[in-house]
Length: 366
Image (cartoon, rainbow, N blue to C red; front, side, top):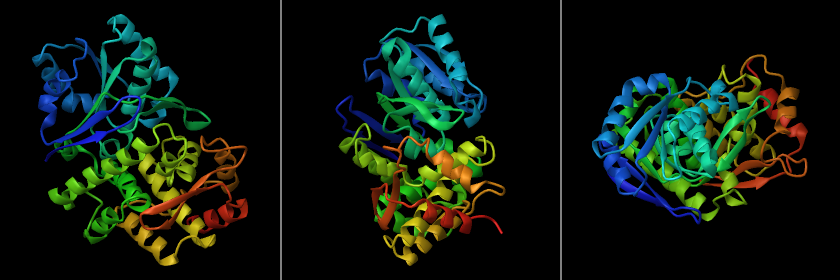
């Protein structure tokens, strides 16, 4: 696989390169951007052990001066306290405004590295090298960066576009099956909100719960269609003034579930899957979406091995309270992204609390 998608945004347009085995040429790709010589590679212990030496060797081969910063793995470490470690090493290594931070990892590493780059010296270069399916199709593209607050996900952050995104599909071979499934939640999301053709291709697949059941042809469609969908939306609305909000389909209730379970019980993709099921049912209750379409969506979520029920013991009133801290709340009203057909959604703040309660009760495990 070798192709390039251009993300055209006012702040800073950039390329997403899909290159099988491309990690070996990371330095060559970056050298085309005329960046400064100092590079800080940020990763976690698991990913760095697998790909850190390869990435650093590729960068040194073309003359970059490279240092690394290893952060603990997991969503619960996506905090200001962990971010301080990146700042400390950036200071120690005397990173300059022409320097670059390279995010080598999944969504947590990408978000934290992007935010560190946005705020260090009021903004230095960042290159995203996603190693999980979720990061490849979603978090590495679009410039959303940030960390979590104990009371809510991604409440502290900035819009800050990368200079370049390198997607090497071959690294997915070492991705744990649960993390692959988490990424499929975001892929299904793109099918619902933007790309009916992608949704149909996913429906045709026999299994979506592990990479080994996904053909190379389908994987290429998954990566290219998902990134193209995000590029299309972001190019029309870089900083979520309107259209970009649709990318949060499934995230409203999903983020509440993540937060209330301490970022330990369910991962981001699993939470988004739960949120999509809830949003679909809400849309049916409000007569915005056909019941058969929500059944198609839920069947696809199940095919990807993702949950369709709330975790046991989760308090519904606590979910409703947590929704009030969501970033999409406007004038005290929670904005939901709700589907109207496969490939199209709408944004509304006219969702009665009783409807949310009813749907969440139906999603409680028996």
